[in-house]
Length: 281
Image 1 (cartoon, one colour):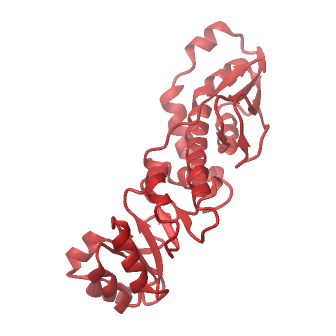
Image 2 (cartoon, rainbow, N blue to C red):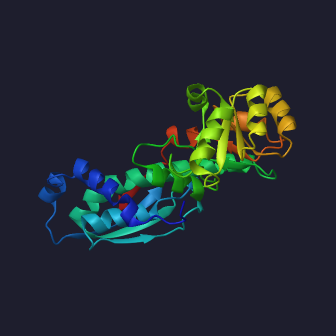
Protein backbone atom coordinates (compact mmCIF):
# COMPACT_ATOMS: atom_id res chain seq x y z
CA UNK A 1 0.00 0.00 0.00
CA UNK A 2 1.42 3.37 -1.05
CA UNK A 3 2.12 6.16 1.42
CA UNK A 4 0.05 8.49 -0.77
CA UNK A 5 -3.39 8.34 -2.34
CA UNK A 6 -3.41 8.73 -6.11
CA UNK A 7 -6.37 10.59 -7.55
CA UNK A 8 -6.72 7.98 -10.30
CA UNK A 9 -7.36 5.31 -7.65
CA UNK A 10 -10.24 7.20 -6.00
CA UNK A 11 -11.74 9.30 -8.79
CA UNK A 12 -14.62 6.89 -9.45
CA UNK A 13 -15.46 6.83 -5.73
CA UNK A 14 -15.50 10.64 -5.55
CA UNK A 15 -17.66 10.82 -8.67
CA UNK A 16 -20.18 8.49 -7.01
CA UNK A 17 -20.16 10.64 -3.86
CA UNK A 18 -20.74 13.81 -5.87
CA UNK A 19 -23.50 12.18 -7.88
CA UNK A 20 -25.42 10.95 -4.84
CA UNK A 21 -25.10 14.20 -2.87
CA UNK A 22 -25.08 17.03 -5.41
CA UNK A 23 -26.61 15.47 -8.55
CA UNK A 24 -28.34 18.41 -10.31
CA UNK A 25 -26.96 21.00 -7.92
CA UNK A 26 -26.97 22.34 -4.35
CA UNK A 27 -30.37 24.03 -4.59
CA UNK A 28 -30.17 25.60 -1.11
CA UNK A 29 -26.76 27.25 -1.57
CA UNK A 30 -27.53 28.29 -5.14
CA UNK A 31 -30.69 30.07 -3.96
CA UNK A 32 -28.95 31.99 -1.15
CA UNK A 33 -25.57 32.94 -2.64
CA UNK A 34 -24.59 34.65 -5.88
CA UNK A 35 -22.08 32.80 -8.08
CA UNK A 36 -19.40 35.42 -7.39
CA UNK A 37 -19.72 35.21 -3.57
CA UNK A 38 -16.63 33.83 -1.83
CA UNK A 39 -15.99 32.50 1.68
CA UNK A 40 -13.27 31.14 3.93
CA UNK A 41 -13.82 28.14 6.20
CA UNK A 42 -11.88 25.57 8.19
CA UNK A 43 -12.45 21.92 9.00
CA UNK A 44 -11.98 21.71 12.75
CA UNK A 45 -11.57 18.69 15.02
CA UNK A 46 -14.12 18.08 17.77
CA UNK A 47 -12.14 15.36 19.56
CA UNK A 48 -8.60 14.10 20.02
CA UNK A 49 -7.26 11.67 17.45
CA UNK A 50 -5.07 11.08 14.41
CA UNK A 51 -5.56 13.16 11.26
CA UNK A 52 -5.95 11.35 7.94
CA UNK A 53 -7.45 12.25 4.58
CA UNK A 54 -6.19 15.65 3.42
CA UNK A 55 -5.68 14.38 -0.14
CA UNK A 56 -9.32 13.33 -0.34
CA UNK A 57 -10.49 16.80 0.69
CA UNK A 58 -8.31 18.29 -2.05
CA UNK A 59 -9.50 15.83 -4.70
CA UNK A 60 -13.16 16.42 -3.81
CA UNK A 61 -12.87 20.14 -4.34
CA UNK A 62 -10.73 19.77 -7.47
CA UNK A 63 -13.57 17.77 -8.99
CA UNK A 64 -16.35 20.06 -7.76
CA UNK A 65 -14.65 23.38 -8.50
CA UNK A 66 -10.89 23.78 -9.01
CA UNK A 67 -11.17 27.42 -7.91
CA UNK A 68 -11.55 26.23 -4.31
CA UNK A 69 -8.28 26.37 -2.37
CA UNK A 70 -7.53 23.55 0.09
CA UNK A 71 -4.67 24.01 2.55
CA UNK A 72 -3.94 21.33 5.20
CA UNK A 73 -3.02 22.83 8.57
CA UNK A 74 -1.63 19.58 10.01
CA UNK A 75 0.26 16.64 8.48
CA UNK A 76 -1.10 13.20 7.74
CA UNK A 77 -0.71 10.99 10.81
CA UNK A 78 -0.38 13.91 13.22
CA UNK A 79 -1.99 13.58 16.64
CA UNK A 80 -4.53 16.39 16.98
CA UNK A 81 -6.43 17.80 19.92
CA UNK A 82 -9.99 19.02 20.23
CA UNK A 83 -10.85 22.24 18.34
CA UNK A 84 -7.73 21.97 16.18
CA UNK A 85 -7.96 23.50 12.65
CA UNK A 86 -7.23 20.65 10.25
CA UNK A 87 -7.82 22.03 6.76
CA UNK A 88 -8.42 25.58 5.49
CA UNK A 89 -10.84 25.92 2.56
CA UNK A 90 -11.58 29.08 0.57
CA UNK A 91 -13.26 29.97 -2.70
CA UNK A 92 -16.73 30.34 -4.22
CA UNK A 93 -19.24 30.00 -1.41
CA UNK A 94 -21.61 27.70 -3.29
CA UNK A 95 -18.76 25.32 -4.17
CA UNK A 96 -17.33 25.29 -0.64
CA UNK A 97 -20.75 24.42 0.77
CA UNK A 98 -21.52 21.86 -1.93
CA UNK A 99 -18.38 19.88 -1.10
CA UNK A 100 -18.65 20.21 2.68
CA UNK A 101 -20.40 16.94 3.52
CA UNK A 102 -18.57 14.86 0.93
CA UNK A 103 -15.18 16.06 2.18
CA UNK A 104 -16.16 15.55 5.81
CA UNK A 105 -17.48 12.04 5.15
CA UNK A 106 -14.14 10.93 3.74
CA UNK A 107 -12.14 12.72 6.43
CA UNK A 108 -14.26 11.40 9.30
CA UNK A 109 -13.99 7.76 8.22
CA UNK A 110 -10.28 7.87 7.45
CA UNK A 111 -9.33 9.78 10.60
CA UNK A 112 -11.53 7.45 12.64
CA UNK A 113 -9.70 4.38 11.32
CA UNK A 114 -6.30 6.03 11.83
CA UNK A 115 -7.23 7.03 15.39
CA UNK A 116 -8.34 3.51 16.38
CA UNK A 117 -5.31 1.97 14.71
CA UNK A 118 -2.95 4.29 16.56
CA UNK A 119 -4.58 3.39 19.86
CA UNK A 120 -4.18 -0.35 19.23
CA UNK A 121 -0.60 0.03 17.98
CA UNK A 122 0.26 1.73 21.27
CA UNK A 123 -0.81 -1.45 23.09
CA UNK A 124 1.85 -3.38 21.16
CA UNK A 125 4.65 -0.98 22.04
CA UNK A 126 7.87 -2.71 23.12
CA UNK A 127 6.86 -5.95 21.39
CA UNK A 128 7.81 -7.34 17.99
CA UNK A 129 4.16 -7.80 17.00
CA UNK A 130 2.83 -5.84 14.02
CA UNK A 131 -0.83 -4.88 13.72
CA UNK A 132 -2.43 -5.87 10.41
CA UNK A 133 -5.69 -4.92 8.75
CA UNK A 134 -7.92 -7.33 6.80
CA UNK A 135 -10.17 -7.36 3.72
CA UNK A 136 -13.15 -6.48 5.91
CA UNK A 137 -13.37 -3.00 4.43
CA UNK A 138 -16.26 -0.86 3.23
CA UNK A 139 -16.89 -1.95 -0.40
CA UNK A 140 -15.15 0.46 -2.74
CA UNK A 141 -13.11 2.00 0.09
CA UNK A 142 -10.35 -0.64 0.24
CA UNK A 143 -7.58 1.76 -0.83
CA UNK A 144 -8.72 4.46 1.61
CA UNK A 145 -9.36 2.12 4.56
CA UNK A 146 -5.95 0.48 4.23
CA UNK A 147 -4.22 3.83 3.72
CA UNK A 148 -5.84 5.03 6.97
CA UNK A 149 -4.59 1.94 8.83
CA UNK A 150 -1.07 2.61 7.60
CA UNK A 151 -1.37 6.30 8.54
CA UNK A 152 -2.34 5.24 12.06
CA UNK A 153 0.81 3.12 12.41
CA UNK A 154 -0.56 -0.29 11.39
CA UNK A 155 0.55 -2.47 8.48
CA UNK A 156 -1.40 -3.71 5.49
CA UNK A 157 -2.20 -7.37 4.95
CA UNK A 158 -2.95 -8.47 1.37
CA UNK A 159 -4.80 -5.89 -0.70
CA UNK A 160 -7.13 -8.44 -2.26
CA UNK A 161 -7.45 -11.98 -3.52
CA UNK A 162 -4.86 -11.32 -6.21
CA UNK A 163 -1.63 -10.47 -4.39
CA UNK A 164 -1.11 -13.23 -1.81
CA UNK A 165 -2.20 -16.84 -1.32
CA UNK A 166 -4.21 -17.32 1.84
CA UNK A 167 -5.74 -20.75 2.36
CA UNK A 168 -8.72 -20.42 4.67
CA UNK A 169 -11.11 -22.91 6.27
CA UNK A 170 -13.44 -23.19 3.28
CA UNK A 171 -10.52 -23.76 0.90
CA UNK A 172 -9.29 -26.52 3.21
CA UNK A 173 -12.69 -28.22 3.44
CA UNK A 174 -13.37 -27.99 -0.29
CA UNK A 175 -9.87 -29.22 -1.23
CA UNK A 176 -9.87 -32.09 1.26
CA UNK A 177 -7.19 -30.84 3.61
CA UNK A 178 -4.32 -28.40 4.04
CA UNK A 179 -1.72 -30.62 2.33
CA UNK A 180 -3.83 -31.02 -0.80
CA UNK A 181 -4.70 -27.30 -0.93
CA UNK A 182 -1.04 -26.22 -0.57
CA UNK A 183 0.10 -28.80 -3.13
CA UNK A 184 -2.43 -27.51 -5.68
CA UNK A 185 -1.31 -23.91 -5.14
CA UNK A 186 2.34 -24.86 -5.66
CA UNK A 187 1.48 -26.92 -8.72
CA UNK A 188 -0.20 -23.86 -10.21
CA UNK A 189 2.18 -21.07 -9.15
CA UNK A 190 5.40 -22.63 -7.90
CA UNK A 191 7.13 -20.15 -5.57
CA UNK A 192 5.52 -17.07 -7.11
CA UNK A 193 3.46 -16.24 -4.00
CA UNK A 194 3.94 -16.53 -0.27
CA UNK A 195 1.47 -18.98 1.22
CA UNK A 196 -0.46 -18.37 4.41
CA UNK A 197 -2.64 -21.08 5.94
CA UNK A 198 -5.39 -20.66 8.50
CA UNK A 199 -5.22 -23.19 11.35
CA UNK A 200 -7.92 -23.74 13.94
CA UNK A 201 -6.22 -26.46 16.02
CA UNK A 202 -2.89 -28.15 16.70
CA UNK A 203 -3.41 -30.85 14.05
CA UNK A 204 -3.86 -28.21 11.37
CA UNK A 205 -0.76 -26.36 12.64
CA UNK A 206 1.25 -29.56 12.27
CA UNK A 207 -0.07 -30.18 8.77
CA UNK A 208 0.78 -26.60 7.72
CA UNK A 209 4.29 -26.99 9.16
CA UNK A 210 4.80 -30.24 7.27
CA UNK A 211 3.96 -28.39 4.05
CA UNK A 212 6.52 -25.68 4.79
CA UNK A 213 4.15 -22.73 4.42
CA UNK A 214 5.35 -19.17 5.02
CA UNK A 215 2.74 -17.95 7.52
CA UNK A 216 0.37 -19.80 9.83
CA UNK A 217 -2.68 -17.93 11.07
CA UNK A 218 -3.93 -19.09 14.46
CA UNK A 219 -7.63 -18.47 14.03
CA UNK A 220 -10.02 -18.01 16.95
CA UNK A 221 -7.80 -19.88 19.39
CA UNK A 222 -7.89 -19.17 23.10
CA UNK A 223 -4.66 -18.16 24.83
CA UNK A 224 -3.60 -21.69 25.95
CA UNK A 225 -4.10 -23.01 22.42
CA UNK A 226 -2.16 -20.06 20.95
CA UNK A 227 0.71 -20.65 23.36
CA UNK A 228 0.87 -24.36 22.49
CA UNK A 229 0.81 -23.55 18.77
CA UNK A 230 3.61 -21.00 19.14
CA UNK A 231 5.76 -23.60 20.91
CA UNK A 232 4.98 -26.10 18.16
CA UNK A 233 5.90 -23.73 15.34
CA UNK A 234 9.15 -22.52 16.96
CA UNK A 235 10.16 -20.04 14.23
CA UNK A 236 9.56 -22.51 11.40
CA UNK A 237 7.00 -20.08 9.99
CA UNK A 238 5.72 -16.59 10.68
CA UNK A 239 2.74 -16.53 13.06
CA UNK A 240 -0.39 -14.42 12.76
CA UNK A 241 -3.17 -14.48 15.35
CA UNK A 242 -6.68 -13.50 14.40
CA UNK A 243 -10.33 -13.89 15.25
CA UNK A 244 -12.49 -11.30 17.04
CA UNK A 245 -9.44 -9.39 18.17
CA UNK A 246 -10.03 -6.29 20.25
CA UNK A 247 -8.01 -4.21 22.69
CA UNK A 248 -8.57 -6.58 25.63
CA UNK A 249 -7.59 -9.71 23.68
CA UNK A 250 -4.52 -7.96 22.31
CA UNK A 251 -3.38 -7.05 25.81
CA UNK A 252 -3.51 -10.76 26.62
CA UNK A 253 -1.19 -11.87 23.79
CA UNK A 254 1.53 -9.23 24.11
CA UNK A 255 3.95 -11.72 25.66
CA UNK A 256 3.48 -14.43 23.02
CA UNK A 257 6.19 -14.87 20.38
CA UNK A 258 3.99 -14.07 17.40
CA UNK A 259 4.71 -11.83 14.42
CA UNK A 260 1.33 -10.35 13.55
CA UNK A 261 -2.12 -9.73 14.95
CA UNK A 262 -4.87 -8.98 12.45
CA UNK A 263 -7.93 -7.02 13.43
CA UNK A 264 -10.97 -6.74 11.18
CA UNK A 265 -12.77 -4.24 13.37
CA UNK A 266 -10.20 -1.56 12.51
CA UNK A 267 -12.13 -1.11 9.27
CA UNK A 268 -15.42 -3.03 9.44
CA UNK A 269 -16.53 -1.22 12.62
CA UNK A 270 -14.82 2.13 12.18
CA UNK A 271 -16.09 4.94 14.41
CA UNK A 272 -16.17 8.29 12.64
CA UNK A 273 -13.77 10.97 13.83
CA UNK A 274 -15.77 14.00 14.93
CA UNK A 275 -15.03 17.15 12.94
CA UNK A 276 -16.97 19.93 11.26
CA UNK A 277 -16.58 22.80 8.84
CA UNK A 278 -16.77 26.27 10.33
CA UNK A 279 -17.18 29.34 8.13
CA UNK A 280 -15.19 32.45 8.91
CA UNK A 281 -12.47 30.42 10.62
